[in-house]
Image (tube, rainbow, N blue to C red):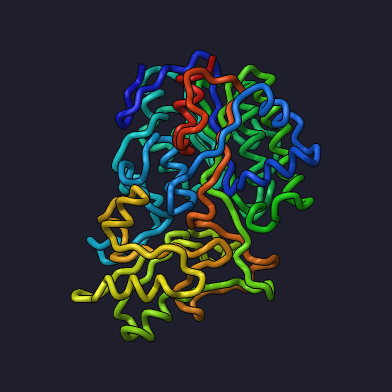
Length: 404
């Protein structure tokens, strides 16, 4: 029995695979199953366990992947976005350095307990966070050609997988993650494997469309192979995905920095978009969650009331209320937290967002409207209450503690 972040876990009794499908709105799976594109999942939902869970808000990649591998919300592990304003250095920085972590991962604890662990993530931004303190294999599809025994616990990944290095903006990046997971299971049979994909496809293709169904069919094939290899599999997502456009098909954006500049004066407020990462072509750094740092003496309550009245804004909270409601570290969010509605995103200034790379109507995430995600295990589970509020970071507990 392992105790990690005040949760207890049984050691794996069979090869265990936890999959985080980036941007997997439950409707992607429902549409694909209904269309006959996911026979493995259809059978699994009938014979195993299918739940709907909540991810953490902000519904972005880094906070949720770290919640899944720590079994805890951001208030515990500290990763509250892909990007933040570091008040100590007065600089805006990426949250991809392990120095931001405040809690150990279950992956590291399993490795310390003598279990073989493998992590394959699509983008390299997550690799160091997921692999922090972990003895084992940890590499990204994005930089699979650079993997070494010393840095990643494995070399010659391209030869192992038998596929070329995928482009970071492609469906093949996620397929490489699945293919690598299968090959590792065939050749090294890790006790625990964590696979994390990218949401490139989901940013471009709505549920039920040919592009989305093709992605789901690909995923289904690899999951079926892992199942056939005797793996206990838990599948969840870091967040959902929604269209963020008006009736004219154009992005529906609240430019929050422009609003504050007009209201309080240019440069007096700093707006941070935690969705920001190095891969902004498919979303233009527009998501449904933002924080704002106010000048001293600001009438926070009045600003909350005004912002709450903006069309497209769902929730505006002060720092303390946001930290409590969304289980966030209060010292790493702004004085205000703003969450937009399902079809609306939040930007900084109109002049600072390059949307020229969008070749499809904007789809994005970050808010409460992208909080519902699948939580599926290919086994019947004992001793669970299907009606309780499940979280995506319950995935390891379910597959390790409750498999019959």
